[in-house]
Length: 565
Image 1 (cartoon, helix red, strand yellow):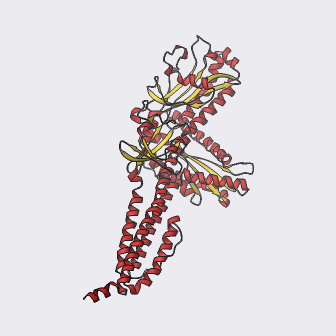
Image 2: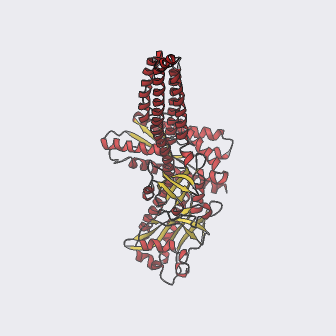
Image 3: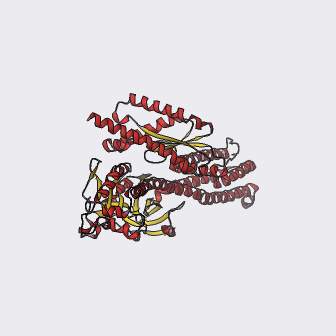
């Protein structure tokens, strides 16, 4: 009896079984560690990049709006400087001052109407121009509840007793240049404003202060409506992190960075943006992550979410892979020594596949032929898992470079294309054209029917543009702006495509059963020339042509409206 037991302990079968068991345990442990570190790191990177891309895309969208405010104010300032003559002319003649006001009034209003979220526009001669003790002159228009601009009484700086009522006037004069101001409460409007103001110069003399206000409360509410996944949200905070802004307390200190306990990447708080990293912190005893970009006005646009939600895919994938690995280990123990060699060979091939996928999920890999045994089952499971992972990766890329509403390429994709075209220009290989398109009257649709209806109109416009330029690259670069890039022989097709676009718009409007579905699109084209030193030069020509067409459409509409009245 003892001899049989001894023989069993030292039998080849026992040794092979023990070897298989030890090997199975080692392999299971190795694959689990490999999965945890390599697959976890890869999925962490995907989740982090997706979050940063979403934040950057929103930052680009709001920077475009802020940039339009800056461009408008600076352009108006230059126009006034040309029209005003000299400071002495203005000081010596009230009639001349009033003449300058009358010449710039319509331009001020038109410019402000074209800027989303703009609330006020004002032009105020300095006290030095109108004279101390004399009534001050200028103009002040504010958007009312109907969305139209109404003229209000300008603030008399010399009579103001509260410094907060004149900060928009004194700050640019003290600084001597255009600037974005911190959010401030405007007593005449009874709301919090975000102002871009500039001193207007004639030579070396400051003659006036010019500015455009954005309704900061509306701006915050718009940002507050942005949702990321199921629980992520966005908000603004001051550049120094001392104030976190929320709609319910737009002009108050809700809380600052001192309320957040930073766990990792604290040094990023002093950066312009988080790039491809996230900041891990605790708030109200909850683990959270945030990313941000710095807007043109110095504020930080923050995207934050639950730590668990952001990395849920990673944890799920790791647990799944560990379970698959454990199942493989159990199968491995059960196999006989006779087929050990047949198992070992495909396992080595699977290891090579795993190593290749750990560095690049889209690597071209060759799986072993899937037989009818357990190794075959494992191979098929990994192929299915890889297929799902690659599908998720493709989906992430689509989310990063395509606009979720209109399904055309988004501003992130547009930025990459601009970089490529600038490189072509530098190398002398450029050959492209630009079509700039802008949806007319979208703001009226949003104001009268709501943003959901506006999104329907915007989507329809994108469909029409995509149909007209079916063989070209269509990008959504702003709220209601699109760009089409024409390449090679397609440049010559621009006019025929635009004619087709006009016919599509006419057909759409004939069939439209609702007034808001009658669309109108302004456009302008430009083709790269050797004198163009970068893509922006071509774009500006197309943009000017588009705005010329837009002005004519708006003018014709006003003329028709006046005639009907």
